[in-house]
Amino acid sequence: MSDSNFKRFVEVGRLVLLKSGPSTGRVAVIAEIIDHNRAIIDGPTTSVPRQAYPYRHISLTPFRLSKLPRGAGSGCIRRQLEKEGIVAKWEESSWAKKRAAMEKRRSLNDFQRFGVMLAKKARRDVVRKALAKAPKA
Image 1 (tube, one colour):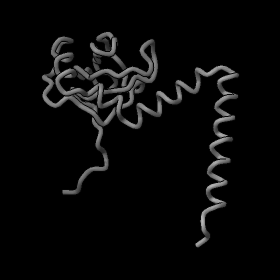
Image 2 (spheres, helix red, strand yellow; image 1 turned 180 degrees about the vertical axis):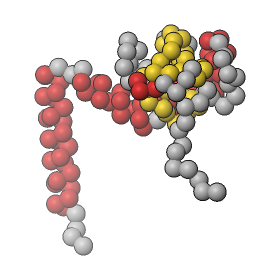
Image 3 (cartoon, helix red, strand yellow; image 1 turned 30 degrees about the vertical axis):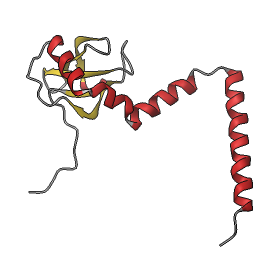
Image 4 (cartoon, one colour; image 1 turned 135 degrees about the vertical axis):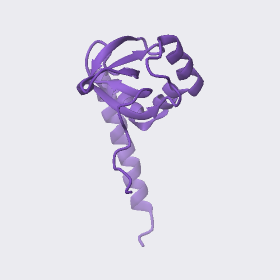
């Protein structure tokens, strides 16, 4: 039997990133599957209320809680999240870091963007001079 290309499945315990709604950008856990369009999500540590959420408004992450029973309550989910440290793993992932960098960049004002431009020019100048000094192979 060949291995599947798919690694992320909609399953109880899967950590999901919310793409729309009032909790956009936060992560939650799938607590129960309702049907082929919706699941009940809960994020007790990320202040996402327990609610039904459509699959088209979530992104599946590679992280999942290992032994979460079906229909687990908020308390059980909170204990599992803290025990396995899934939210911390998410925050250390490159996906989360890229999102944080984009949000930081979006929040800059005009003067701060100008400062970033000058810093990039200075870095580019240092790299260019170091490459010019390097012996040619």
